Image (cartoon, rainbow, N blue to C red; front, side, top):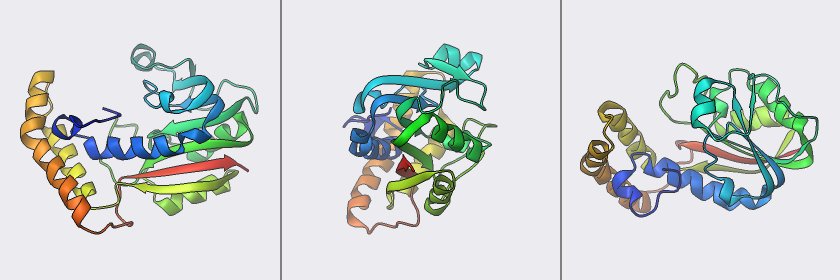
Length: 227
């Protein structure tokens, strides 16, 4: 799901979103070194891209997260369980929209990072509500820059993922997936092949032919540094 290969275009309903995120994170991951904190780590899908000497996964402390996630540490949603300036880098991918207190969250990231440490953040701009009811925000490129700079970070690189007509096809496939998903993995694969693969193929073709639109895109990718 997180690194879709050639088969993803036929079977992955989130093909464009995952492919875009993986490409941008891979390009910027060389900045993630030393002792690294992955905030909202999930299954740590991008750990192998980073040049970290230690990779620590952090999650909110819930029974579901303890059972299904690959976290090394858990916290109460307010204060990270680490000393000041104890990490050389931080990563947080597709988590920030689920944070109800974004400034407090960024202050905690700032607190546990050493001076001049890198922070790689991805956050949706256009996407449906998900993991409800814990979905609290969408951020424009200007909004996420403002929040980061206000809370002690300088922006090194800022990118927009899937900023062309493919965004429309991804939203269509997300809609189809949500309306057709079943408990059967075989049936889900058949539905993806029948309903979503044609949209993935058409999106790939038109994405190469039509001009980009930097005002409409799926995700923000930001590489920042603790100022």
